[in-house]
Amino acid sequence: MKLLIFLFIFIMYSVQPIYAQSQAFRMSTFLAYHSENILGLKNNLSSSDEGISKFNIKYNIANLESQLALNYDGYNKFTLDGTYLQYTAGIATYGVGAVDRHWSFSKNTSLILSHNARPSKAIYLKLEDRFEYDWLPSKANWSLEMFNGFTEGSLRNNQSMLLGVRAILSPIAGLDFELIQTSQWGGKDYNNGISSLGAALFFETNDSSNANINKMAGFGISYLIPSIKMPLRIYGQTIGEDEAGNLPSCFSYLAGLEWTNAKIMYPTILNIEAIDTRIDTTRNGNCGPHTMYNNNIYKYINYGKTMGTAIDTEGTSLELNVLSKISKTLNIKFSTKSVTINDNNWSGHRLSSKRQSGLMNSLGISWIKDNVILNGDIYNQGFNLNKAGIKTGYGVSFSSSIIF
Image (cartoon, rainbow, N blue to C red; front, side, top):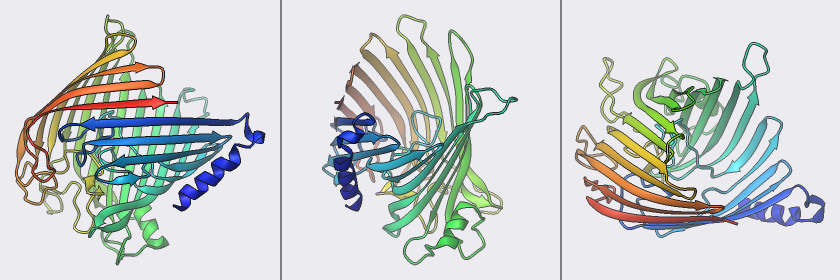
């Protein structure tokens, strides 16, 4: 509420003529509906509800940017997800709000922070700059993002804090590296002070007074192979759920290929992606089935949904996506995915009490012209997920987005 009041006062003050030449004002609406639940719904839909509506007001002035996002769905009712206020000075951007983060070079999902769960309310810092050394190419650059916020339900159904850090290094055009870490810390009955914050950010936490902290960390890579006719991008990400000697361990994996052909009659992007969140038992017994996204103190969730990839722990997926542009305004997308959920038959799994496997297929069309986007999809899921309320069957979804 305080943030809303501040944003309102700021916008009212900023519309004075003195700022007229440097201000920008934009509104947008988004409506979406799906008839049946399906794992990992797109278009900002959640498996908890059939539809969602959004109304955004974005206002920029000089180095200050703000967005007021009003969202409504039948499950969460009204939320402010997407609302933020940020200020940029030089290479630094300081902000506060509920920003949706996707930390991966994959366009589909992320092992550590994806669009699967609602965003956390946080303060954040972004740094971005180019390297200015003669021995590096002119396109070499780097960026760093840090945030600290709150998650709901991860600590005995109460709030706890989530600290995230992502650094990206791009030494040459087409080559990118990422280093990522998240730390769940604080909350009821645990230290919420500076010492605990420092441990969550820098230090080993296995054998100390801050042993409650749950860290996940890893790295990713993306490389676009230069080609005039058929550019091919290779990418991957690996994230460790546990910590050993201040380094990640107990890894899950994501890997993909993205091939683009813009020279044919219907320009096409073909993407193949594999994910594996199964973790084998190690010699010291610290890793094993269901290690990923689970901790004896913190659950890696926000409002009941995994903050990483939608298949959750102990799962696999192999996905093929094809996107073709058949005219200036029409795109067609086809997707088929082979999925395994709860491969070890764990009764405590968040999605299903038993192992489930099968195919997920979808066929969609989108119409894009100026500031209007319309989408329609037909989809099918060939397996049940009893804890997520998802059943075998077909469904349809529609969404529309308009920017004023």
